Structure formats: C-alpha cells, structure tokens
Image 1 (cartoon, helix red, strand yellow):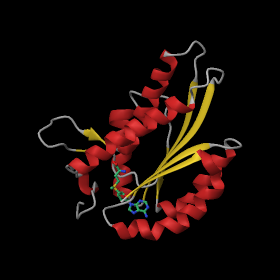
Image 2 (tube, rainbow, N blue to C red; image 1 turned 90 degrees about the vertical axis):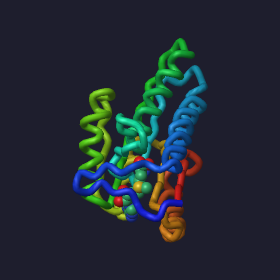
Image 3 (tube, rainbow, N blue to C red; image 1 turned 120 degrees about the vertical axis):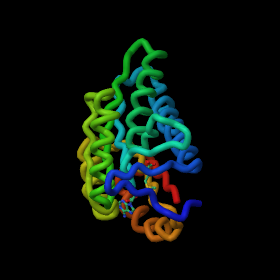
Image 4 (tube, protein in one colour; image 1 turned 60 degrees about the vertical axis):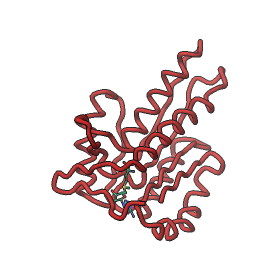
Length: 197
Ligand SMILES: C[S@@+](CC[C@H](N)C(=O)[O-])C[C@H]1O[C@@H](n2cnc3c(N)ncnc32)[C@H](O)[C@@H]1O
C-alpha cells in the first residue's frame, strides 16, 4: 500500500503505481459489464445511471517508461460508459441510449483545477455531450446534495459511488457508517458502492 497520497498541485503530474493501474483496469471492466448486463432486456431503449466519483483526484498521471499520459478514474468512467453503449448497441436491433450523470468531487482545489484541465484537453474533445458536475469540497459534505440531485432524475435511479479515498485505512473506517446511512435511502438495491482504501 502506498504511503503518500497522489497530488496535482503546482502542475505536478504524479507517477502512477501498479496498484492504481490494476484498480483502473477493474473499474473500467466493472462499469462496462454493469451496463451491458443491466441493458440486456431488448425491450428497453433508455438506461439512466449516475456515476459519482467522490475522491476524483486530478485525473492524469505519468506512467513509467511511457510518453502518453494515463488518465484517472473520471476519464475511465466516461470512456467505459461510451464503450458499453457501443458494445450493447452492436448486439441490438432497437438502439439504447445510456443517459449518464457524472459527479466528480475532490476536496483539493488544485486537484480539481488539474481535473478540469485534463477533461478539457483529453476527454471533452472525444465525448462532446458529456457535462459532469465538478465539485470542490469534501465528499461527505457534498453527498446530501448529490443524492438529492440523483433522486430528482427518476423514481429508482441507478447509481455507482466510487469511493477511492486515500491510502490510509482509517479514512475508510471513518466514512463507512455515515456513508452507508446517507446512501442507503438514495436508491436501495439500485446503488452500488465501490470503496477502495
Ligand atoms: C487516491 S486519490 C484519487 C484517485 C482517483 N480516484 C483515480 O483513480 O484517478 C484520492 C483523492 O481524494 C481526495 N480526498 C481526500 N479526502 C477527501 C474528502 N474527504 N473528500 C473529497 N476528496 C478527498 C484527495 O485530494 C485525492 O485527490
């Protein structure tokens, strides 16, 4: 487990560790499979999903021995949804529209500034319709507003919460109970929480 948190202040682009690369692979596969499986019913033509990255980071990394940047969890969520939509529609006669609301939160203004630049430079040009809500502040302080916003969008909205907090297990312990209580009334079984410590 790494000792230091990734940081994007002063233009820094952190070097990504192998554990984070593995996490990103799992995240991408999970989101893609989730959508593919939940849209299997050929009668539905619309699928609505909220993706909340509560500890989003600056969105960009350096990778040892490689020139191209490696994009972080916010870009991976957007790319995974786009890939799932293509994969699902390739197998259907009736095309389906995946309507996704993205919420990206980080407590650090420097990290959010880096994330906005990353999305502008590397993501929005490829996915012009994507307009995430980007929030600077503690996830726990933004959670109620995010849950209210998700609930406004439908009766039993589906949501995935990615809680990739930091390297210290005590953060997870501090969040577990309050988070469970806050998220539980949101969407019952339609909510998935991926907590990573
Ligand atoms: C491990 S990094 C996130 C990496 C990112 N999820 C990825 O995979 O590319 C953890 C981030 O959580 C942020 N953070 C720590 N505590 C926070 C809190 N209470 N609320 C929101 N963000 C927080 C840090 O500023 C840091 O950017």
